Image (cartoon, rainbow, N blue to C red; front, top):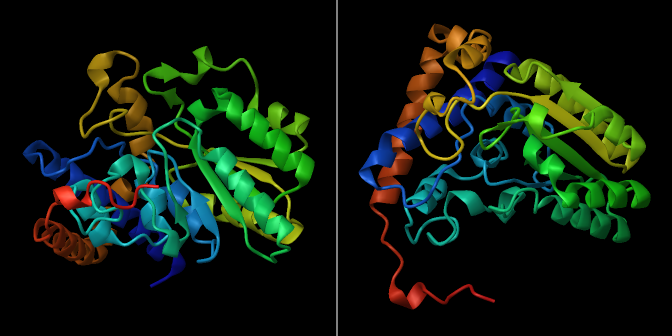
Length: 307
């Protein structure tokens, strides 16, 4: 299989896993709120393709796609969502606090933008230790650009020249609010003020385009040991939190999504991915069965792993 097919297959895997979450959600098997990444898969696949196992990604609460693209184990992921003892965090963390340190996936947070400074801090520690080649990725949505923390982090990263890649998934929404009524600034101009290189990808539905841009960004950070900002415009297909659709909210329409879906290769090339689809569904079914066969935490587990 060629690289293009492989990238699409990785995107498809993420989408099918999230569609399984949607299928399971009404049964109350999922013991956690979920912020789905459907529609944003190409951003994660395109970036993580160029990362090594020792690179760290600090994901956000809408982090399923980056978790899976970075190599996070699927059975333990499903078990965590179901609140089972075999989950990533023994069922205590749920969807919004995923972590898999062995794969370089550092714990997410439900607080908008809160893990960005952690990525910068880790990059500073790496610089102090004089590590070579390793980079750190801060992944966040466009809503985080309105938090004070991002500006402190951009300033610090630029001032101290640390190897951090800022990856903004710009779906144009902060919950139900469009970017035009939230931000008075231009992102590229903002990054220029901080003297941080900036690259924007408008075709966030296309893993090929994202991959090329991500390669440029990752290569720069890895070789120059300096920060870089990659902004990927994309589209959130589902509601802010939960498995449903939210057109009744009045802040966007089905026509808005139709424009993106008309260019979505997972939709437009549906038949070409049939072989991969069957294999992925078998993997998902096995992961769900693993979770269903796993025990719930006990009272004795309540205070374990607490510092």
